[in-house]
Length: 382
Ligand SMILES: *[C@@H]1O[C@H](CO)[C@@H](O)[C@H](O)[C@H]1NC(C)=O
Ligand SMILES: *[C@@H]1O[C@H](CO)[C@@H](O)[C@H](O)[C@H]1NC(C)=O
Ligand SMILES: *[C@@H]1O[C@H](CO)[C@@H](O)[C@H](O)[C@H]1NC(C)=O
Ligand SMILES: *[C@@H]1O[C@H](CO)[C@@H](O)[C@H](O)[C@H]1NC(C)=O
Image (cartoon, rainbow, N blue to C red; front, side):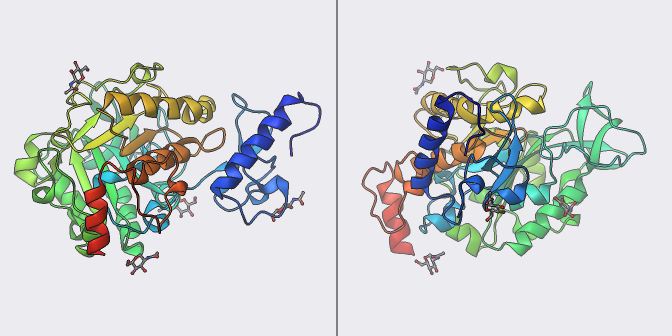
């Protein structure tokens, strides 16, 4: 499984990892070692389902099969809990995609945060998207700013294009719930309402009036699905909650410091706009873990052990609450499990008090839980 000529330790480590992973059951379809988790590979077709072939020189030699797909926590553990008892893989600057063609006629001079389009992100299990919205060319665009403005050389695309991808996904996947978190610079009156309407997304809109205000639980995910209220949208502009019915993010969510300031091991604290992380009057917790300026070759290392360590640190800082949203750059890059494993950990802790959601058995009556009542209700209600 390991390439020849390396230290004797490496094969042992890999063997241990394979054994650990085997118990989590990712790759039972594999018939040979090379297609397994962390096995050597030269292309994606060498890797089992849910894995792909990645080179990560900062973390390991050659190329290996690493995870590419999130666990579907809803179908794995078939009980319906309140929305805030689940964790979701979140892409930071989901729109800032490498290779996105210029829509302005001017080549882009700005950085990228992801490497595949939003449709592909959603298909791999991303369920929350962080988008930066600007007034630009008489419309709403997704953009990086330079001095607070969108420019033709920092613009990625009209927001409608990405919102239509979300609409297509929600329509094709009637049990899925998607959260959109806007860093919002749109000043045009009803600018966001117009673009969400034009994208056909209002039919999935989760109304602000159903959002818990004082740290209460969110509705059960089964009710959100039944009511077809499967799109959550948060804006960073307070007044839009009144004027457009778009939830003001900081009324419902806490978030740690983003960028380099949020990546110091052992330290997790709220970003300026957010209440302190331990303010439990906000029911949702978002953990950022990405550099101020993304460096693609380092993402595979950052999204691995250090991310999981920070998840633990932020759990403690958040009043012993596990993150609902785990936001990263280059979300598929890792040394193995990466952001997918972090989300599995958060879901495991949230759903059944286990370190991995794969350990939450569907037919078990959980006793470790801090929300036994919710589970009882969910079981009664189902
Ligand atoms: C391992 O299995 C994969 C998929 O089943 C296949 O594509 C690959 O060629 C196999 N590799 C070896 C070395 O047999
Ligand atoms: C989940 O449970 C519900 C009712 O308990 C059942 O109708 C549904 O088929 C189950 N879904 C899966 C994927 O097992
Ligand atoms: C997204 O990317 C995939 C390839 O990964 C491509 O097949 C698909 O057409 C793209 N979709 C959109 C809406 O750009
Ligand atoms: C919240 O955390 C702060 C430190 O950031 C601490 O001073 C405060 O006592 C904590 N509040 C609660 C209710 O735990």
